[in-house]
Image (cartoon, rainbow, N blue to C red):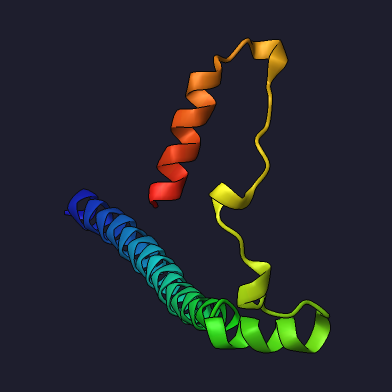
Length: 112
């Protein structure tokens, strides 16, 4: 009888320690999961903020305002824009390109 009681006490102790370790392991895993969920939420919020900032910074109106504020460049006037036909012909002697190719390109540019 004593052996059975001693055996049950030992088994009960082993089960108690096992349940205690299991509970602590579960609590640690749950805490880690909660921390990861918070980290995921914070990362998603940071990504959303970064995307909103990117869309703002790359918006045409914002870039136009920056260009006007910091650049001395102005938009070209119609008088400054020329066509391809207005350009002087370029001779590429080193490539031995026939004159017909230049004339065909010039005629095509005039058509456009």
